[in-house]
Image 1 (spheres, helix red, strand yellow):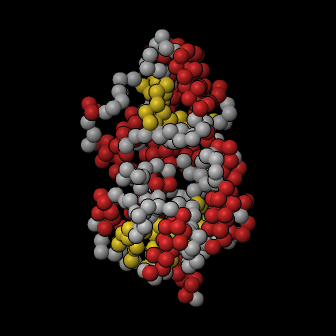
Image 2 (image 1 turned 30 degrees about the vertical axis):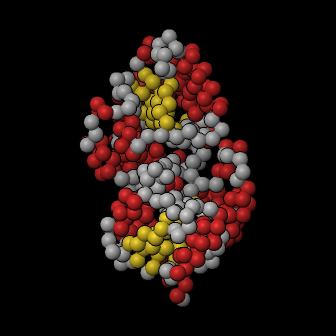
Image 3 (image 1 turned 90 degrees about the horizontal axis):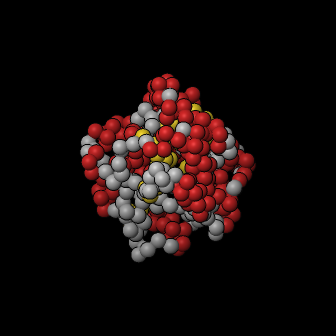
Length: 392
């Protein structure tokens, strides 16, 4: 079988694995081509694509070919017109897009992975100017796709709520975590070259800074914890790791307010933002955090929850979206609007660590159920079902 893959979201601009859809795309594509040696894979990447990442992909085997776009720069024309023509030249049996959209000019068999549709429920959480995507590109992609992969049952329900036409062609295949890679990174890292200190306990919040992540209430909950236990202000910090996204003014104001209230304890702030972190730094932060605080209003999957469990870090998460699907019984859940409950959960994790032992053990066990190999098998089954249908 000849499988064309949309590599538009395969890695970040700097060649790193990226986060969110970029992280998913890189992980699933790698797992698929390692698993599918009996198939031919053609991975179509943007004009500017990391030569290191290209070499990594092609080194997996002769059944993999990375095809760089002939366009000089990414544009509407190159993605929606030139890319489909380029793909068609290689005569694929199916086109797979891991980023939730199919180019407008592609009319052949296709499979698309959908991560979430929160923008339809709460457009105010997202950057302005999304009409082209939400009103044209996404609906047309869902209509034309032969099969749709939802990364969670919560995402499947959202797809069928807003796009009833997809009934019968949506299948749930989750995401994964590479536990062995995490511990390999952790085992090979020296503490003395970190750009952030580990001389204090810290609560970690991980992800792009944006309204959906509910960081305003996370900051308020941490402030409430410190006010209830002022003796902890000298030894505990809230660390926010992730690139700056959009509509961040409110969270920046709240962080400033809390840090101003506690400036007598630490001029650098009891809440510190690190910005983007590398893959290595991410695993170091997750492994060393006292707990992960992930109070999102909605998530299509919630990979940081799974990654924290994989390294034995207790998780406090909201009970919204797909997070209960991911965490199961291994996570401490709170209502995302309940600052008091969030603060109490922080108190349990920070001051009664022995009480989180069961969560750690349950999280480690649960993370073993989510492997990228298992995810790749599920995705390949969906792709193979498309080709079988077309040959009948």
